[in-house]
Amino acid sequence: MYDEGVLRRQCKNIKDFERKLSSSLGGTIKVSMHYSTKANSHPAILRIAKEEGLKVDCMSPMELYINQRCGFARSEMLYVCNNITRTEMILAYEAGVLFCLDSISQVETWGKAMPKTEIMGRINPGTAGVGHSQKVVTSGKATKFGISEENLPKLLEVAEQYGLRIVGTHQHLGSLFLNDKVPSYIYGVKAGLEIVKNHFKNIEIIDLGGGFGVPYKPDEEQLDLDYVAEELLPILRKFTEEYPSVKEFKFEPGRYIPCEAGEIIGTVTAIKYENGIWWIGTDIGMNKLVRPSMYDSYHEISLPQSEGKMIKANFCGNVCESGDILGKDRMVKLPKVGDIVIVHNAGAYGYSMASNYTGRPRLAEVMKKGKAHNESEYELIRARESTQEMFKGIIW
Image (tube, rainbow, N blue to C red; front, side):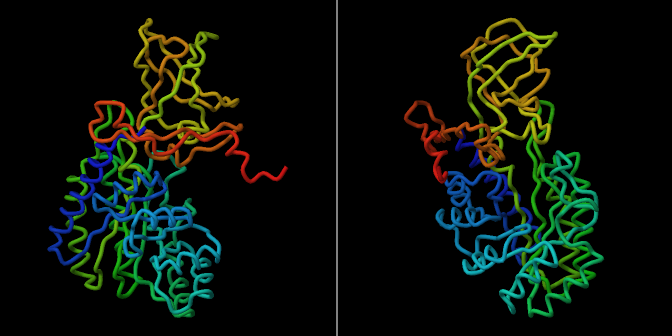
């Protein structure tokens, strides 16, 4: 379930951040916020983002199609991809969307298919990335993303060979930073801008990626976007003075928009005490929320109906894997089978990473409209998947 009010609040926060940067840069430099569709691509969420003035980025034909259907103009979209086929490149080019490529070989593939066109190139600033897990750190020596500084001469050579004009650069340090990691984020921004100055001429667009985090744990603070802006502005001002061709700074907030708006609501299906451990079994398996299993991520879990004694328990799902754990060592009241269980902060990378693993259907999605004081203000925005729908495409 998603809360429309929280979605709009987060969009407004990001737009305030955009306006602060833009006004402080004198209004002559454009600042754009592209919601990263991969965090949650449901049209109901994308339409809210559009209504609140955000643009979007996409990284697959499906995301491109959804963004188009939701009314985003080609100038409001950015295609940021990784290791895709020539066919997909042509599809995005024909849609008229500005394209960002993150390897020299992909630039060469593009150049052979669409010579004398405009592209953006993804650089790896080489600094240590930021992120909640090594699996989502996207800067530094060990990441698959971007083109390192030492290989930029070759990039420029290939671009010239095919008559490609590199109109912008892109960098992204990783996914989910909060206030304590802002200095690392700023350090990475400075490094990337220095690389642009040293290697590129007449760049018009600088995309500084996303990674804006939200608190998952009770003791974490909200990301202070005013603090981020205050740290960024001196760097951006200095850069625009030294590099006058730049016309726009882009950012790509993803999880920041839908994460806190989303909850997964399930049921307690089993309770047992084995080997000194309380286990609370639920019907929320890793096929519905993979983040705890994949990243060892923390999500708050609540039992609003439970009234039993306080226990320390592990929450698990219904997939036959030892890694199918929702949360460990949680202090909760002992529930009963059939009680409601809620996993919080699941609006980003929840449904978008869900699967049919072990043959289980995906969840329904519901939008809580406005303040939603009664049942009629809850809107079904995706029906629960049926077993028959999962059979579609199988040739028996």
